[in-house]
Image 1: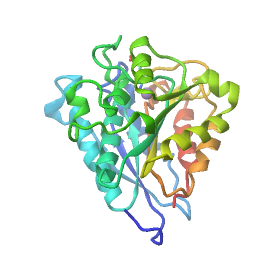
Image 2: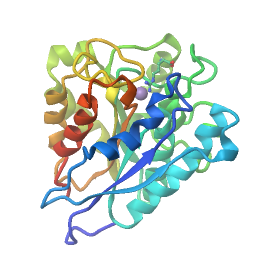
Image 3: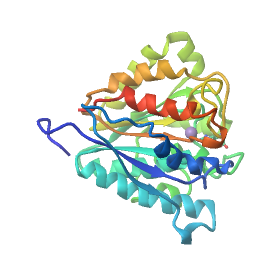
Image 4: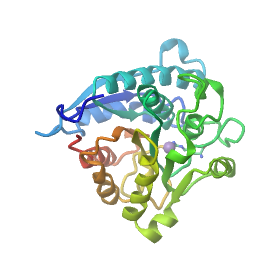
Length: 297
Ligand SMILES: NC(=[NH2+])NCCC[C@H](N)C(=O)O
Ligand SMILES: [Mn+2]
């Protein structure tokens, strides 16, 4: 990792161009579209560069489980490599199953220093296992896998240990879930800030509490943004929209608190589906959320 005195970290964008974990194939086109639209802007104070766009290796395309596991392993290695150069990985999906790779890579890079925290911003809980999922879709499972629950092909990407501890994780924006995943998160004691609570208290107050959770006892923390956390009326370009989400401006304002924070180590923006977008409105939202966190320290 870089020392406090070295130059600011660059944002290195890594694409995870796969929809193996989701029903609508359009989100596999997300990273290429975001790169083409040039939504991630460098500024005089913030260098931004695209790295690789990773795809499912040919030999792993036989089943979704195989595809997600293979891509996650490659992504974890790439994320770890970016952190090792002292830079900031920004992973863009692809469906949300790529989170298994992203946060396994962050875990691997930081594990010898201590645990990591994660703010999961999403309309859904993504905390199913094959035993509880109603749809069978792996993008409904990544948070459970990172907490150590589910098929070993997903939980043991980078060694058998859980990549996240429940007390270092929280969810923001939830408004659609099924019983099995809610029970798992509740048993584990993971804090869920659902939309009702956000509307009652305001996102700013909730975000402060979320930050306290992910900082407490960790060596660094990240943010995973599923674009379906945003309101689909404003941002339609996602595969599993749910009404009643966050406004782009309010989420950008909350994320801007992370600017210059050396403990903020990685970010992920997933589920962009260019086929469902209105022009590139939703792509622009992804850009605005990244603008909000820059410059990094
Ligand atoms: N990352 C996402 N968009 N997840 C949506 C999951 C929807 C539903 N809970 C399922 O498991 O199928
Ligand atoms: Mn999700």
